[in-house]
Every structure is written in C-alpha cells, then in structure tokens.
Image (cartoon, rainbow, N blue to C red; front, side, top):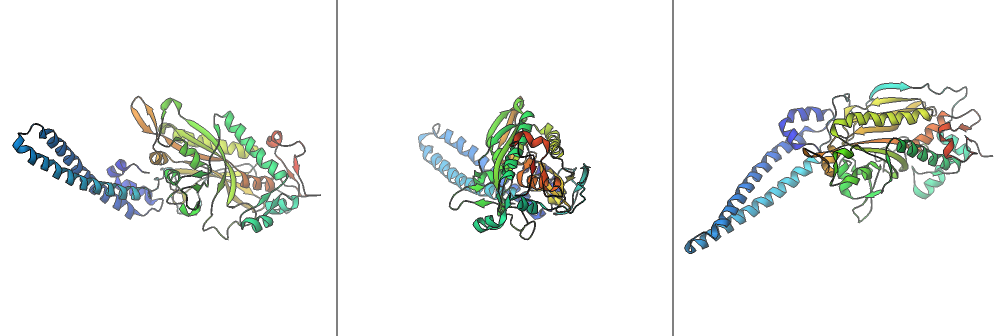
Length: 423
C-alpha cells in the first residue's frame, strides 16, 4: 500500500509515476477527494470528543439545578459524536478500498513500456548451446526417456498437469537440495511454507485485488492456494516488530504452488512450461530500507550463480514499468535460452517491493528512533519445472541422452549422471 502522507504531499508526482504502470489516475483523484472529506470528519470527531469529555467533567461540579441540563448536553454531544464516528468508519473503509487498488510506484531506474513489451537487456552471459543435430524440445526428450507423461495426467486432472517419473523425480529433488545448500551457506534460513493462506495474506502481499483471477480458493472457506511461497514467507511477520539489529532476515522457502493461469490458454501449452501446479524454491528478505536496493542486487547475483553452475546461457532483463506486478517497484527477469523453443524464456525473477507489502502486513522494525516499516524482496532460486526444461534442452546429445551438470551429482544416485531413453 502506498504512503497516503507522501501522496498528499506530491499527488502529481504519484500520478506521473503510476502512469508508467498504466494505472488509472481517476482512482488517485478519488483518493484525494475522499481523504480530504475523511480528515474533515475526523477533525469534527476530535472536536466533539473533547467537548463531550469536558462537559462530562463539569457535571459533578455543576449546581444541582443545572446538572440535568448538563447531562442532556452531554447526551446530545454523545449522539452527535456517535453519528460522526459511524460516518468516519464508512469514510475510512471507502478510502481503504481505493488505496488497496493502487500499485507500488515504479523505481526511477525502471524503463518505460507497456504490458508484454520487451524489457531492457542488461547483459547476456555464456554462449548459446550449439548442436550439429536438430535439438529436441523437453517434452520429446521426456517422452523418449519415459519421465514426462502429460497424457495420463490430462485424463486425471485436465490440461496443464503432468506426471514426472523416474530419473526426472530424482533430478527435481537434487535441484531442491542444490538450492537449499547454496542458500543456507549464504545465511538464508530454509522454510517449508503453508500453501493455504487466508485472504488477508493475499491482500497483504499485493496479489489481491490485481491477480485475484489467478488464485484458487477453497469453497466455503477463507483459504486460498498460494501461487508462490512469497505469500507465506511475507506473512511470517504479519503484525510483527523486529529489532533493527536483526535485519536483514533472509529465508529460502520450498513449496508446491498453484495458479489458474487465467487468460493464458493457447499459450505455452506444450509440455510442462506453463502448468497449474509446480514446485519452487523461493528467496525472501526483510531488510532495512537503506539496504533494499543492495539486497535486490544480491538476490539477482544468487540467481545468476545458480544459472551459471547449471550451464545455462541466459540474459538479465530490467522489466518495463507497465509489465511490473502491483507490489514490485522494480523487477529483474533472468531469461534462459531454450534450444527446443529457439527462444529466451523467463526462468527466474527477483523483485524489490520496498515498503508496499510491509505497510499492508504491518511488518516493522524498531530502532532508537522508534518503529519503521521494513522493505521486502523476493526472488526465485529454482523454478523446478522450468529448470528441468532448461536442463533437458541445454545438455542434450544427438542420441537423446542428457548430461547432468556436475554440481548436481552429489545430490543424485550414482547411476544418474546421464539421462537416457528407455531401453
């Protein structure tokens, strides 16, 4: 949620900045009008409370002949106050409903551009895989190996589900262990997170209302299935106060994630690239505001380190303002080259959400100057499905076998150094 005080001080600056996210300025105008009206009512409430309190104190000091009229005066003030307090609650609720719609303004270093426009490529790393044969895509390789079965999954669960089998399952959990060990050595605390959360967590992290159509809900319960463990990790410090000395608090969460992928039908339907259910290892940081941009670069550094060790050719992209999600002030995507698609595709991303989520979640730190909002950041360490795709397509050989990167060997059964076709 934006800081309403900063918005009052510079409404035109906010309008200009949020215009880069293609946000409707009419909502901002409504906020300004409602904020003025609410503060006027609040002033009246405070004046009446003071008058009522003063009159109440005077009752005991009144001559008996005047006491009845003073009591009546207090009652009238109380009735008027009750009406204004009710009006104030209505105004506050309306204002909250508007504020909850407003996204985080983009950072000045974010390039301009609309949704789905290409971002600014910062760097490309490594050489594109070169083959003296026609490379297969991940689904062809998985079917050849007997490790990916989307046909049987579709009969059971519908489209965009899959069975992973055999060596690919071992490879999935090798990736998890690889990421957990790496992040643990860098001071991140491993967490297995809940995948069911209350609505307040979805609003608190900024996924509601903007992405509500992407989220699965349990019928007749205030519980939602998370599309990323970012939601559960951010919610760990809901309504909490930490010491300034404890920052940064760094976590690496593992969970299954579920998304409806609403509006994406007809795109990326082949194989396991865009599915409803996937597993992910997610980084999350609560940090001091003065260090959040440094922390953002740290998360990107970790993502790049993982991509290099897995032998991927990739590029880092600074996402345009109009394509940022509601909570993010800035986001980097790490796009990996997939030979089977002959294209770059998003593998991981990392975002700085500044104080946007913390204000909604009431997550603060305390120093000698009092309480302040933390900054929150998130970044994908390993998106399991997409990383499996990149491994299969990048490290394939002409005979259909796939060489497993050495960094994963210690986490695999000894026989699994090369993935091969079923005999």
